[in-house]
Amino acid sequence: MRIEKKQELSQRRRRRIRRKVHGSAERPRLSVRFTGQHIYVQF
Image (cartoon, rainbow, N blue to C red; front, top):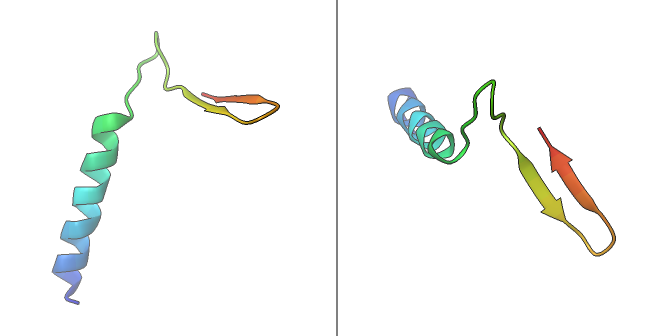
């Protein structure tokens, strides 16, 4: 695979992820995961 193609795919992935994950100083990013016994929160 050409280097240009790899870079393009990497940038596409990054844009796709950045679209979903967003935050600011007033409202930081938050990730919540539930298991059978615990709730995990990550800022």
